[in-house]
Amino acid sequence: SMLVVALVTMTETTGDFIAVGEMTDRPIQPRALADGLRADGLSTVLGGVFNTFPYTAFAQNVGLVGMTRVRSRWVVAAAGGILVLLGLLPKLGAVVAAIPAPVLGGAGLVMFGTVAASGLRTLAEVDFKGNHNLTVVAVSVAVGMLPVGVPTVYAKFPDWFQTVMNSGISAGCLTAIVLNLLFNHLPGKASSTGDEVASEPKAGAASA
Image 1 (cartoon, rainbow, N blue to C red):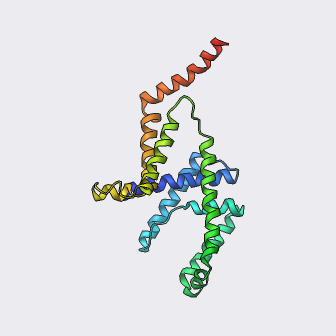
Image 2 (image 1 turned 30 degrees about the vertical axis):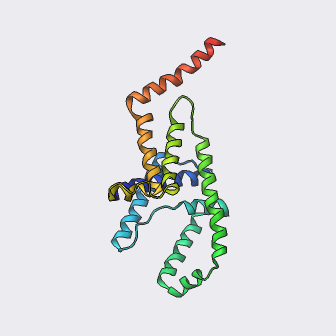
Image 3 (image 1 turned 60 degrees about the vertical axis):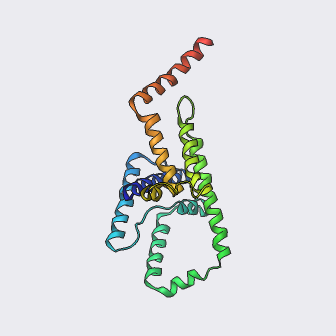
């Protein structure tokens, strides 16, 4: 289950990187993505060394970038320093905890809405013609929403299965990964899809 969670975390982190790259007009290249995933894994290792929770990228931060339009790394570094101080000085943490819940709720509403809008914008750039991408997206979203709509759907399954699939995020990520490999990356599927896409312009030219 930990390996599955790590895979899901990498998928979520990849989405966060792509979304931030779009917001900052800096498209994410494969090398930058790999470096980011390595840094994410290193932070998780450090969290384990110090006997704390694993650390990973959060979509809330993507929403924060979109909401504030602050894109400076110095601001992120300063925020990290403030978090360290909050951990070392409990009184500062109490001041933050005193912020009224409606204020946090209003900010969270905008941030999560920004995350959803960024995801929709990313999906809008996907090519859905001549391939099975629409099926991948549709089934993944449906499987991800299943534990939310029907919380007892996996009640009869083994505990290890429930640990993974009762989370809509992990269920949707795993479904997207498996279907993408099945439909778009297996040799037979990839070649047949490519042939279909390549044959479309010829048909159009002939009819013209």
